Every structure is written in C-alpha cells, then in structure tokens.
Amino acid sequence: MEEKLSLLLDFFITLTMGGLGFIVYYQQKKSFTNKLFLLFTISLVTWVNFNFFENWVKDESLAKIFLKLDFMSAPIGVFFISLFLINFPRPESRIALKKSLFLFAPAFLASSFAASDLIIKDVFFENDKIGFYDGTFFYLYALVIVGYSFFGLGVLSWRIRKSNKKEKKQMKLILWGFSIMLVFFMVFNLALQNYVSKVIFRVNTFSPILLIVITGYAIYKHQLFNIKVFSAQLMTLLIWVFIFLQFFFINNWMNYVVTSITFFIAVFFGILLIRSVKNEIDKKEELEIANNKLLKMDEIKSEFISMASHQLRTPLTSMKGFLSIMKKGVYGEVPESLNEPVRFIEAANDRLIMLVEDMLNVSQIEAGRMSFNFKKENVNEVVQEIFHSFTVMAQEKNLKLEISLAKRLPKISMDYGKIRETISNIVDNAIKYTQSGSVRMETIRKENVVQIVISDTGIGIDKKGFEFLFDKFARGEKAQEIKKSGVGLGLYLGKRIIEAHQGKIKVKSEGREKGAIFTVELPIDKK
Image 1 (cartoon, helix red, strand yellow):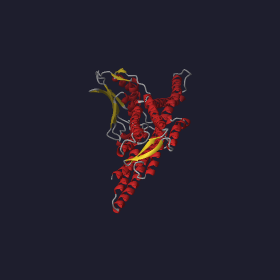
Image 2 (cartoon, one colour):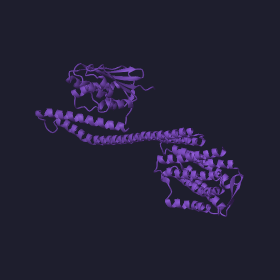
Image 3 (spheres, helix red, strand yellow):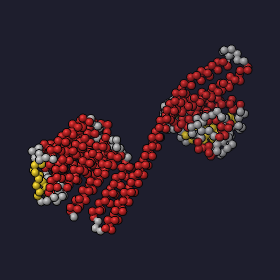
Image 4 (cartoon, one colour):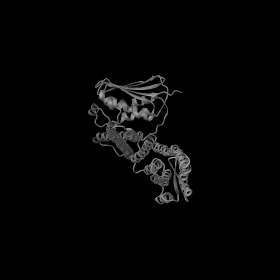
C-alpha cells in the first residue's frame, strides 16, 4: 500500500507540475520568460521522476540506471532554473545566445561526466534503498550544482534591489521558493542520500512543487497571462488529475468503466470550458483594442477641430472688423442696394464665429485644456448685461423679455465670461424657439446656491427630447424645423462649463408647445 501511495503521489506531482508549466507557456507562447518556465518545469519533472524511481524499482540494475539519470538531469535542471531567474520578470531582459551557451557548458559537462564513473564510482543497496560511493569528480560536480544555484540567487538578489515595489514582491517570493528547494536538494541529494531512510529521502522529491507553485504565482502577479483563462485551465487540470488517479484504486471492471467514462466526460467538458473562457477573453480584448482605437481617433479629431478652429478664427474676426468699418463708411458710403447683403454677410459671419468658438471650447474641454478665470462676481450683473444685449432681438420677434433680480445676492466664485456665454446661449435658444409670448430671466437665492432661471412660452420639449438634450450635436426635430443653421453644441458646452463650476443645469417642460424652464445653479462659497 505504501509503494502504491508513493507511486500515486509521484503521478500527481508529475501531472500537476507538468500541466502548470504548459498552462503558463500557452498563455503567451512568445514570452521568453514563459518558455524558460516551461523548460525548467520539464527538467524538474524529469529529475523528480528519476529520483523517485531509483528507490521504487525492485531491479537493482534498473535502479542503477535511474540513479545515473538522476545525477545527469540535475545539472540541466539547475541551469534552466538559473536562466529563468536571470530573465524574470521582464522577457526583454534575456541574455545573449552566446552567454546562454557559455552558461550551459558546465551543466553539459557535469551531466556528461555523471554518465561515467567519475561522479558515482559505484552503488550499493542497503535496507531496500540505493546508495553510492563518490567518484573522482563528485565534489566538482557538487560545485557545479551549488555554483549554478548561488549564481541564480545572486543575480536575483541583485535585481531585487534595482526593481520597483511590485516586482520586488514577486522576485522575493521566487527567491524564497528557490532557496527552500536548494536546501532540500543539497541536504538530501548531495549529503544525506546514503544516510536517511527511503521514506525520509522521498521528502526531497516534493520540494520542487513549492518552487513551481510560487513561481507560477509570481508570473501571474506580474500579469504575464490572463487570470481567468489560467484559473479555468488549472482547475480543469486538477479535476483531470484527481479523476485519473482514481484508476490506481479500482478493484473491479465496473468501477473501471465508470471512472473511464467520468474521465472522458471531464476531458470533453473541460476543453469546452477552456475554449469558452478563452473566446470570451479574446472578444473582450478585441473590444478593448477597438475601443482604444476609437478613443485615439476621437483624440485626433479633437486635435484637428482645435487646430482648424484656431486657423478659422483669425480670418473670421478680420472679416467682422472690415464689415464694421465698411458700414461706418470708412471706405466710402455703402450703396443702399448693398445694405441688405452686407447685413446678411455680417450675420452669417457672426454665426460662423460663434460656431468656431463653440467647437474650440468643446475640443479644449474634452482634452482637459480649458482654462477658467475664477473671480468673485455678482450674478445679477451677468444676467442684466445679457438682458440688455437680447432686448432688440426679442423686440424684433414681438416677444416680451422680462427680468427679475433677487436682492442682496452674495458674490460667487465664477468665470464671468464663460457663465455669460452659457446663459446667453440659453436665452438665445429661448428667443429663437418662441414664436409668441414671453421669455423671462430671474435670479433666486436658495440655501447654498444661486439660481438663474430662464423660462419661455416656446416650442417646449417632449419626453424623447430630454434623452439627448445635453448631448453633443443634438437638436430636437421641432428646433430643426424652425432654425436649420444650429449644430447643437451650446447646451452640451454649457453643461460642461456649469459642472466645472461645481454647479448644475436643470430643465423642465410639460411637453410640446408648452414652453421650457432652464435652471442654472451655482454654489455659494461656504466661507
């Protein structure tokens, strides 16, 4: 029973360690670190099995072969471990091929000599356990093993000092795991193999598990592969291993059939699970890549709009200046027949200037580059100034423009120009989209905020319109019918400006043709 249990444990170690190595490798096949992890896992699995079978087989000649293979595989194993330690955690830090071959030379020589009598002179059997007599080069062989081990530990320790906080934690984990395995390996294989019992000696066989588990965890923490895929693969592997190990305890053919069916079902659904998780992750990664591309394109678009707006603003401002001078008669009296065309040109130019300013402001806000000049200002002064500037426009449409200012309003911290721009846009919309009736402007103090309320008797807003009212380039159907020249940036820009003031902008409307009420809230300083 003891021999059967030992064999069972060896199978478990082999399948688990080997499976973990391949799982890590298949996460990123091109990663040099993952390739080295697979190589040192395979070399350790090979050494563990040779080490185990040298004391498990009953045939003495076969036991001698396994002992030789044990000593031949050990230098190769420590070489790959050292190479892994040198290159962890950054794959790009790989050492040159010539240096790798140079480092491999001692391992190759030690492994070759282990096949001869220079390392192991002879073997003996005592208490059902194999032992050996030291060969001429045994201590040189031991020096190679110890040299590789301390070289790997030394390089890792040196790199720990130069690494960042995150890398330090992962590298320290590997340092501890490797150190523990090294102690077990040296004590049991090189010093105590001839003196301890077979049962105690087998403790040495399990020491690489700790190193591989810790290393796998460190690679995961360094995010060299996706944890969801890795977890699914690891759990599936463990289920397969545990079901497979049941074959060692089967006593009759019925149990064998049931276990076989269970194993094949587990393999089938395990593969489906892994593929499903991997497909899900791949799709998410594709979406993330596409989203990043869209964000990049949006950034490029914003940069282009910003640049174009800057280039357009200068000639438009010049045109406005020349038109103003022309109207004053500086270049001679303007014929009466040209007054109307000049007025249309001036109006169109003003609309273009406003559009360019809005687009420039939008691009600056989205890029986080809009600057604000916050000062203590009186809201009533802003509203009164806007009222006077829109009086003529309201009179031209036969609308009643009303104003009501709260008394003794405290001054609040705001950017006077940008608040004026925001409120002006709301009043402009109210007048444009009100065919008859009135537009009212008022200021109100409520607790810790000052409210600027603009109400009208215009076209109103339906339920559908509320969904996109403050979106970029959004305009209602009715608004487009009345005025086709708008682009729908004003409210979007206004909301962002008010939010930058830690304020709010709200809107109410009972529906089509029932008017609208816009309320801008700006916080009063707590001091």
